[in-house]
Length: 405
Image (cartoon, rainbow, N blue to C red):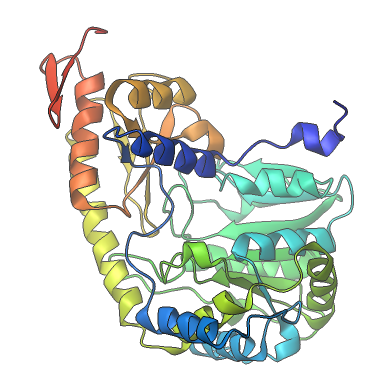
């Protein structure tokens, strides 16, 4: 079979593949614990569900404008004013089928073949593949000081005449690191001076811990005109536990939004009307559910970090936000793909290999499940890896014998 160069080069999403594996194993009755997931287990806001149901009951489920329905755009404008202190116009907004599509059409609208996109590493698994889908070159940047907090000079050293955009995801997937206000201010100023697009992936911006407050990138922008190359991405998937509704958005200058809309109109048309109505209801409704989820995630993070810190040989980075924890398991196995497969085979625990995020020997663990899943999952992993653990373990009524150490 003859495939295109892009078709040959793009890998499947590791995180979505794990979700599929977990679903298949559970269907077979396997006692799987999924610590690799990227979606909260809480239900979508009641207002969103009611709004979607009411629309379905009318039978008027039709096409929508390619850039989103007015009701959703108004909700996004209000949200942007409340949480970013920035009043934008409807022409500055595009609603997409998830924040992922918003980033994708943005890259398609700005990137030419062989132009470069820089992003700090570890990075979300889709950034490199999205850039490659546009014929561009992904440029991951590891902080030279060995931390998960990039400095401006780390980024600056990788900028070339081919650099078209920089993507900043804070708090970060997979590490949970929230970049400092000083860094955000510096990167906004730097991109303005160098005439580089700055894509702020803010999908987790309110899921932060230890009393931290969301950082507003617009606060540091000197150019807020229609020449601005600052783009803010957000969506309802994470904060509102609405992953399956697939609604995200971008805020940018009007010319860019127009180009993105044209592209999206040929890709998928507008997002589904039912999920747009639901997303608008979530954004306009009570925000207590977001805070409730944030508190739950902070508690889950504390429990996971306590368990990992008691695990000989494991070094865990304490997340500042999100629902992920990035942990170094290289003491036991340096190949993170082999390690994740080993844990799945031996104790039916799913984790995401760190190499998918650019760093081998590490794994991403999720804290968005139940506390029982976190504690039992780490117990199973410890039993599989730690030579000081007992030789037997019960998973439900199934007795496991450890014969590989």
